[in-house]
Length: 392
Image (tube, rainbow, N blue to C red; front, side):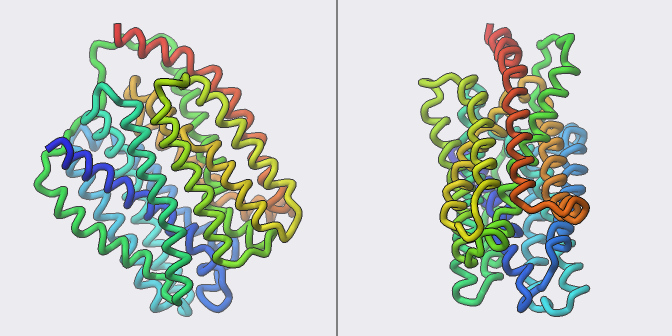
């Protein structure tokens, strides 16, 4: 029975990863003059309801988890993801009706935000409860499945666009989600938040939380600069085709996944502190490389974004894992989503106000990644000491 429960959780992570990347994956469709014909600002604005509602859902997750079962929250979250994909699919039939199509897409991103905000913290909590003695590796495993989903989304997008059927991706996700919900329905999934009642409240918990929150915020910005704006950058700066744009997105999320799987496997052979402290600087170097690339160099951009993906790989799972010991997983995801929102719809207004190129914005992102890296030195040692105290 445990195997079925883990299969349901990991399969949900896979599908959640795919839904999360659907809109960045079809950015070339949304901005194509012959299809939706949205401006860069309109494209960025699509993520406003997703971010706001995801923050609201994740902020309320702790309260909901005290009154509802985790399974109920999970079922609601996945159902909202299903509604999001249906709205996206139907928008394909009214893409030239600007107001109607944009309204459907805003509804889709809104449902997606609610679904993400409810589902991801619930899946992380369930994973920890199903594997209480292997929380770190189990969390990394879940996020690896999330990563596999983010890799599959641009690959399927490229395939469907190639046959003139871009909305095949949301259709595929609808087909996958319905049987998953029926498979999960009879399972007795674990419920309740992670709470260590015997743990004394540390005197510096407020400062600890601020550090966790800031790292999650900065990580959200760094990840989203790659995940959401990669295709736009490669189209405008690299003059890349839609297939190469999808390759770049797949390279980024593929290396995110590779890193998470790699560090889950070698966890016993390499210190988490080393991984946690080095990865942000790899991401910073990759973002700086992106900022320095000459125009019309799409394949170099693919390599640079792949390196950025490796730098991002285990940062969020490890931050969630460290934060879990203080029962603030939902809050950490909330701050990650704040960073996601700042980057998702803040890039276009920043460009309009400052008249800077995407290269300059990626250079700024490299500085933020360096700040993130410096903050990991402040958080890791004290967090690990608390975990050791709990084990003792």
